[in-house]
Length: 174
Image (cartoon, rainbow, N blue to C red):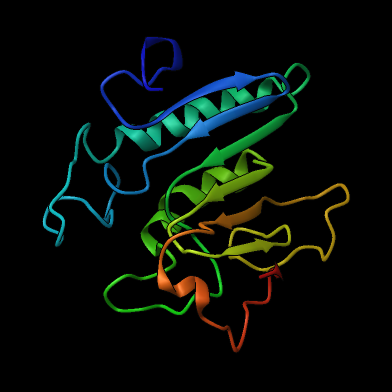
């Protein structure tokens, strides 16, 4: 949880090491430019720490984690909203968060994050490793060269019953 030990005191982002995995929790709702639940949105949420603090912290944390790969070889980032996916983009509740992708994905790619896990969309979708534009760089997971995005919001809302006519090119399993 956020606290002094995880560098997350008084905000909603933090990180910790768990065995061989560096786990990074980001806030995909507020505290970055054009955040979906920030001020002046329908939810009128945060900002809690300003528009740039989370992104500056995120880059520093990933830089340190990437330099520590000999000790902790895996980097996993998780947030609530997906950056990519095949879910229909409903006007009231869009599935993919473009503002999140623009804010966080450059760092995820630059620092060779292995996995991005999220929810928000109430189904399961796994992507092949992708580049900074969401294009697949491989159709397998052997010695991956890009992050693997996994959406697992399996329970809850009605879109989990929806069928998908087309999937994005990076989609491996839906």
